[in-house]
Length: 539
Image (cartoon, rainbow, N blue to C red):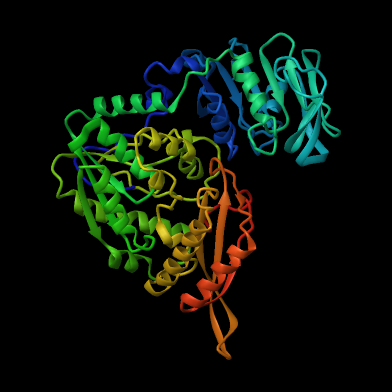
């Protein structure tokens, strides 16, 4: 969420993974690290490793071999990336890391980097592979232990290893990629051209299990219950007797942050709900009810709808919307926080996907997809010391953590809602009149999906108001009105997503209700885009 003012400077989150609550409590001795070479989905690798009950963090690609010795992970994974290893400006790792005795697994670009560093060759291929491929296992070794002779894998590359020299042996191949997987004959270095982290590689989880458990020797000891207690202990120690401000949004992220803080510091927590006029239908009342039922902390509610409408007037660019919302949020927060004595810390519900999409993760080479006002749009002079206890977690992990903390399922499994609210679902200019249309349409979408018993089977469902007018006919009269798009996706991690195959009867019912009940809308469309190439939110 967002901030306040004080004389205490903002303390940037250190890049050193040893300070993370996720690795507190003696969990660091069973850690896998991922070196990020610009892949938008390095986080997927980390998440798949965590599914093995082994903690995993992402570090800069250029971390020194000496620093890795000090961190002492059980294994190192080199992510994919968009560059070519033979390009002069290609991101590289410290070549000494291959010789420090820690097992290394290179994925796609990471494989090419490892093989080139150890005597192989990489070149552009005329027959690029994008999509599903049949992979033949030539030598199971430890990496493919328990695999059938052939398995489907997901490829996405234009370069590939063209020669492995005398130091590598081939473990697998495809029809167009003779070195689909390799291992070094002397060093604990493995590589695969395909992507085991995506769901399109059905046995990808088994590959990672074989590497993490079988090759690296990790014990399956990391659990969210351990994380919860470690985070509570860390918060209690860090905060001391000072006060923490937490912004509430109605979503699971801010609720879990508040629950962690409440268990750690109790009455030292103050929460602020800013009604920016961009909330869902009946959102404010729902948040107040949920908050008062599960916490006894200090709650402040700020009515700032007019202020936000003024700063958004005439603005259509998505990034500019996010910037203006972030700054307006800060001003509201400052004004309200000034009424709270001894406000020293600001707690935010920042998650791992927020960090990577904002380009803020470990200052790595991944591209910025969009601004998140809780990670990328806040001015440096806020004056609060930031607390981000969920920064290392994925959405599904946050939900499980919420259950560990005793939050009700209705709150834990609520569909995500973006920080900038309905502004990024109201394409074009945001006005009070258009927000009324969007709010009503969105309520119909969610309520009908709930009535059909599909709310828990879908990951995120909502309406989008498009700045597109089309001709229609109502009551024998011509109309020229706006269009609503329905967006519903299924995902485990919100880094990739597929569109929900909602029943036609349900879509027809939603469409009929929106057109009949929402004045100014005469057309409804269904978004069947996956992520990638689209994002889940439209802006």
